[in-house]
Amino acid sequence: MNYEDVMKLALERGFYFPSCEIYPDAQAGFWEYGPSGVSLKNKFLELWRRELIRRDGMMEIDGSQIMSKSVFDASGHLGNFADPIIKCVKCKSTFRADRTIAEISKIEIPESADLEEFDNAILKNNIKCPKCGGDFENAKKFNMMFKVGIGPEEEPAYLRPETCQSIFVDFPRLFKTMRGKLPLGIAQVGKSFRNEISPRQSLLRLREFYQAEIEVFCNPTKLDQMENFSEIQDTVIRILTSSESVVMTCKEAVETGIIPNKFVAYYLGILTEFYDKTGIDITKSRFRKLGNKEKAFYAQIAFDFEVETTVGWLELVACNYRSDYDLSNHAKKSKEKFEVMDNDEKVLPHVFEISMGIDRSLYTILEHNLYDDKEHERIVLSLKPYLSPIHVGILSLVKKDGLKEKTDEIYLQIKRKYDAFLDHSGAIGRRYRRLDEVGAPFAVTVDHQTLQDGTVTIRKRDSMEQERIKISELDSLIAESTAYP
RNA sequence: GCGGAGUUAGUCCAGCCUGGUAGGACGUCAGCUUCCCAAGCUGAAGGCCGCGGGUUCAAAUCCCGCACUCCGCACCA
Image 1: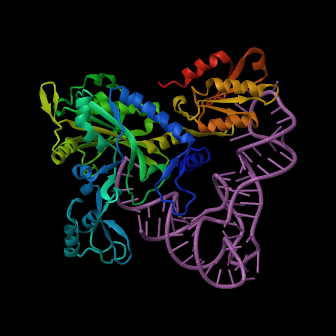
Image 2: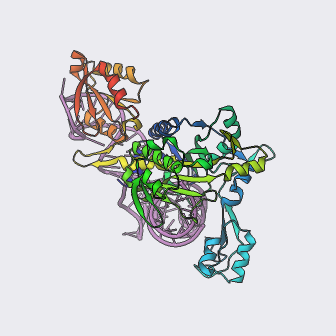
Image 3: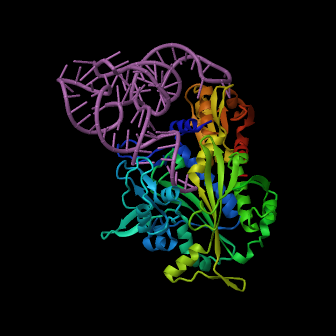
């Protein structure tokens, strides 16, 4: 199914929809999750915690969304998280200053250069608007961070453009008080904010979006001493470099040098295992090794985890080896000490990050799991049972003869433990199909036989098969079938 | 931000050219029916036609702005 089909499902079944949609001044790039979306998101995050956080004994924190100016001074976002732009006086088109100058005059000016450098280059080389030949206004910086004013004096602060800065800032306290030991993973789930020029495609490019980030602090001299590497050495990953596309095990990737060390390979391996369990088609995924020009300003080595969808390859996760970029800058700016002891050695840890875009991941899960079952005239969201917004539908075959009451009774028994949905109204087939669309893996139906022998039918979403089971077996069956892997 | 195409009920769309304040399908709800897969029958709810302004006796319809959506450019988790 394609983007439009997913969009339609999202709107009709309460997965997500535009924010502030009843008002004319609603801005692009802001979306809300409805009940089904929240339920899916919560379960996705629980899987993330199980597969990555608990697996490695990482810590999870929950930091402020608004952070002080100093943080972004140190992190480099104030200077670097901005694009130099130039605007044509005549046709009002806006261009990236560095790129436009490089294209026309072959002069490379780094994007972080002073604005005068761009203006001078434009003057000297007589650079005009590529569209209409008009002159340019002076170069400006467009910073993608949202500025906020704190208190009556409107002290400047910013909405965080990535969640990880609180992890770096909090690192000294966390390491000391939580008895940290390298390598140490610290994780965070939360919102980040970027003032995108042109947000588009619902959850795929947002101005306010969810990230699940993991920052692993490590001793840079021990990147190949990775005890649990054996756990994932045979995990198959797909890698795209500038020259080739390969499918190989993590072990082979390290041996051939495509991945620089066991440490990085380990995390790419467990990330792959995680995404496999979300129900994304892992054969349509790849780690794209980024070239120097594509990398973020803080990254030394970068792999983007990308997945193919009907709107192209989507970047779901950015894996960056940030070295000591963040810690050394925060140490310099704050005068706080960030060195820690690793056995007898004093080290300033390096950082490898796994920065996951939650919204994009959820979209991809929906797209990869939605299919049109033409034979049975139904749309099925074939989610993994543990991710389904609704675990089980509880239905009465007909309302009369006490079936409704019996159905209510079963619903009452299980509704606190599972996401159950009670439905009495309409034809049974219609109710099954509605449940298929929100991905409920099971439907339990109460019929006349139920009143006689205490059994119900349980219908499976994907096969549409039914079997009779005792009501007393219901709990354990659902528990088993919807358990995380 | 630019270029192109759009915006009418929860969803998809007709009506617009040739002004006279809305219609279909699906979905939803209630009842009947129905003893297991979107059946049928009856009834109902739901839209000041994206927002604002203009022209007109009269605007979904013509004109102008703005917002949003989609496709390209650029940017990115």
